[in-house]
Image (cartoon, rainbow, N blue to C red; front, side, top):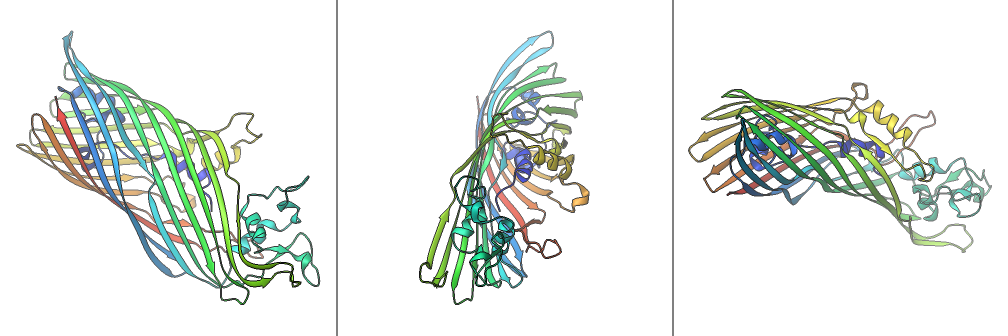
Amino acid sequence: MAQSYVEGALLFSQTKPGGSARIQAIGGAQIALGGDYSSALSNPAGLGMYNRSEVTFTSGLSGHNSKSTYLDNTDKDGKTVFTIPGISLVFHGSKDKNGFLGGSFGVSMSRINDFQGLATFRGRNEDNSIVDSYIGDANGSTTLQFIDTVGGGWMINEPSWLAYNNYLIGPKSILIPPGPDDEYFTDVPIESDQRSVLETKGAANQWSISYGGNYKDIFFFGGGIGIVALKYRSEKTFGEIYSSPVINNMSTTENLLVKGTGINATVGFIVRPIDFLQIGASFTTPTVYNITDSYNASMNTSWKNFDYYGDNTTILNNEYMATDEIISQYSLTTPFKFSAGLAFISKFGFITGDLELTNPAQTKYSVNDTYDGYDFDDENNEIEILYKTTINYRIGAEYRFEIFRLRGGFGVQGNSYQKEWGLDNSIINISGGVGIRKKSYFIDLALINSSHKEYFYQPYYVEDQDGDNVSPLASIKKNVFTGMVTVGFIF
């Protein structure tokens, strides 16, 4: 149930176009546009188009909704989250020397990834139980695997260790007649009402320190450094309710906290060969993160005053066990990004579009050689096999009438999975917005609807006698609706 490193590689390598409500309203397309603080993140050359200084603040409200189907039962869930997706300060300095017209220095914070989510699913399972997965993990070794002693204890802090200490599983050697001491049984019935809740929190925010210059109002260039703060938190619960004379229910909870800091660099240009056309491109280096994650799990079981051994020595009622806090430290390098865009501009507004190229299969984990002798070779190989080069595209437009602005946009975050896996994590974004622009201030409003493709979640893993996966599968669809407001003051 815990977040795997392979899943985390994709989750943390994906970014969304950050920036102001103006940019979000036009689908995030910004590479060839310029003149917005969002350029500090996406293409610093756009800062060269400023002719005055400004400070901005952006706030947002997002509704994260999910629809889950599990064992022929459908559930809906969701939550609303207030965010501060952007702040910025841009200083402009004019200059006219040999065609160089000066430039602008920008410092901004932009939200580049959002990990918020809440999904609930439930259903009646008459084919298998999560306890079957604990038995599968434990089979093949004696109870020495669960005991902290010389030559033992290698399964301590594992889910099956929690189940063993909650008496959900036990060695067949205690049965009458006794069975093998490396095979396990359970007193729990197969049939149960299952319920799971998956909640995630957190975000990745990038502070960008960038400069953009202007040569003859024809060629704009820029570069910058990005410092990323990453925080991801998940809580996953799973429970079963039984109709049994010996047990009421069981539940397990897993908590994962991932925190990290990364650094990258971005360079870019925009060229204006004719007055109504701008062409832009930017390149962002891989982001190198230092990450610390902490994980813990616990299990509760409610028995019905059950005499486990049949000799009145162990009477079960409310049992509980928790793992230690397991802390890991490692490095993660996410792939580079290359972006290119066009903008067609007139006095009535503009139309602009972007293409972005990245390859999550290039995401790599690494650890210090002294880190318990562990490496990420298996995970890195699986990442290469599972993911592929991804193309994201965005298009947007703005109509101008006096001080008023009307905007619309469309974007697609492409599928990151190789075709043979039959999975699709693409996201479709539809956006719109309005704005007012005065000489000393501006206000922009954006509304964005993000529809995620159906994804699948397996709460536990069970094989049948033929070795086939017979685990239940939850189908989850996610939709995010966001409202954003940017207020800026020009000086």
